[in-house]
Image (cartoon, rainbow, N blue to C red):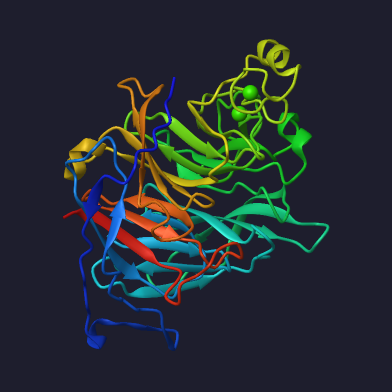
Length: 396
Ligand SMILES: [Ca+2]
Ligand SMILES: [Ca+2]
């Protein structure tokens, strides 16, 4: 069972300053998006499990608008989506942001351009996978496309799966390529709760496709569906051992982190969080009748967990075998230390509590640094003049 630990602020974090000359900046499409600014003068962060780790933060890029996804590319750049439709490559050394594509999306409510993943053989098959909202009010949908990168810009998107029910809320839309070289897609219930239990519908699911967009061979129901009963899964990551983890928004209760297994029912809307009867008298019987998979961790009141990464690097050795995830509502980076088998949470740590505002994207780079993307311009935040930002975290 997991535990929720909220320790008082107990150790200090020193922020480093980093100034850059204008010559280091790159002009993109006539507009400079490169604004590397000094960070705040001081800050503190909570940490109960790793008091010996002193972390420093740097602002890598500013002037962004609702960073939705950050992914490390084989080119050593950070590949980024912003919800309004921009796809960019970010140079982590200089902070230069180069726009490589503008996807036509419907940025309605929580929808817009969302997930991004790269082909595992990107050097020879430079496909960029993207998930986005489209369609007018009343006919809002989501789809997953792929576009070829020619070294400068993205080509025309090719639709892999369309007509995924969409809404101004609950679109899911995180993408990941698994060690099985298949494309995983989270979909939300699109504010139609019962659809999550409908195995003929693509909403409220984890989907699994081939890299060409076909239902993956071996999928549990012979369709695109991999797991079901999800409400609004906003984060997804594969651990080193191949385990798949998803973060999911609950209603006003029971945000969840789940370990995803093929064919399992994750309960929504009949089950909130664990099979403990808290969502009504029918919860326990539904759980037993449907072999519902319970979450590894829950949060009530809700924190709005979003992008998640798996940390398994020696740079911050105390963080090894942890899930780290961004939260929107709680504006905090969470770290869940996992058991050796990856099936249970051993401890929970909160970091950078309300330090940067709403957090949606998190990335671990190959050198062990952690990058965060803020979401303060998503309509629910209080942006700083420099928002949105990409922030790097490393040991001091
Ligand atoms: Ca659930
Ligand atoms: Ca429950």
